Image (cartoon, rainbow, N blue to C red):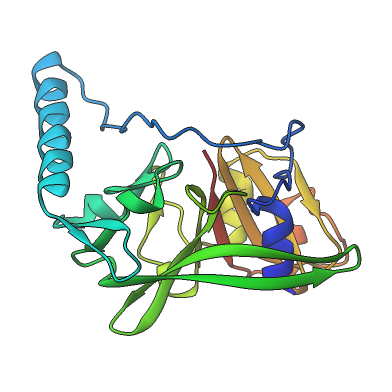
Amino acid sequence: MAATMLLAACGGNGTAAPGDADGNEGVSATMTEGTSEVENEAAEAEGTAEATDATEATKADGQTAADGTTAATAKEAGAADFVVRKGALGALKVGMSVKEVPASIEGLYDSWERKTETFSDMDGEWTETLLIFKKGGKKVFHCFLDTDGKKIYSLVLEGAASHIMTEDGIHVGYPARDLFNQKRMKWETYFEGTTFGKSGNVIYYVNSDDLVGVDIPTKASHFKPGAKISQIVILK
């Protein structure tokens, strides 16, 4: 049920994300890599240079995948690589071409595979193309692709992705009450298993079973004391 709600919220096949009136049609192949904000120009210049060097190294390590697409092996170290900044998780970015997806990112995932799945809800069936990212043979997170199946439409964090955080430190498993108090968002629900709030390009999901006496939370106490974030979706 939760997977169905997630697809309805951020799937690439022409489905609008919650709170996005124009449906987020299409994605841009060109993305500006986010760099950490610093308090002086010298530090900012250094951070930009490091990001550029990392990008060039990724391109230089390019290799051809089994399906004929070009992939790169990106070596990225440090906890900062597991922070999503402006739609980017290290060398992996919302809007990038599948051909540019690194074959692995050290410490984050060591392989990925492309998969097409059929889903259904009360409105009917539809298919989505996903990239499944794995580490040690286990799924870590996944991406949905756009309608053409050529570019990443969204990053989806759940389950084993609890070590991947947003810039303000929110991650899968984060207390729902703390999230509610920390971010003032309009919460909604599909009445099919999850409630969610959207802040900028990030959607936070909590299981409906963790609500107390309501379908849509309007205060922190509407979440059970132990309620946690079950999924985080990163859009462009």
